[in-house]
Image 1 (spheres, helix red, strand yellow):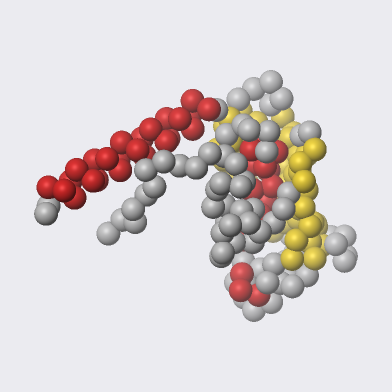
Image 2 (cartoon, one colour):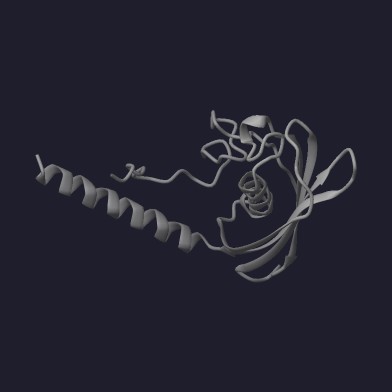
Length: 167
């Protein structure tokens, strides 16, 4: 059975969304606060052991989510809907739980285009080592966001109609 989807997606606003990485309102989330200046984004954070893969080592998927969100925040904080279309990750060293890290992200290419290329890295603040880095391609577009929202609203209405027929 599929989980019910919301009839309307929230706006791309950190105060209204449920982002696992940065929303302060997601009780299961990481609650990372990003600082965005121009085409760059950074944050310091510490991830607890509840996000470990192996004991003491943060799961690679959590690291990927942090990098993806840092790179996306370059655009979202300025009101641009950004959709990740491709991401390549290199895991260089283990990322240990309960340790302070810094994530940095920057726009690399596509200043005048709807297709943007970014780079991000997670650095251990104690050793200075880059533990994980990524490059990603984002598609920017309000029309795409509106299309996604419209499609979801249409699907929800169809599901409601079908559920009404089954009663």
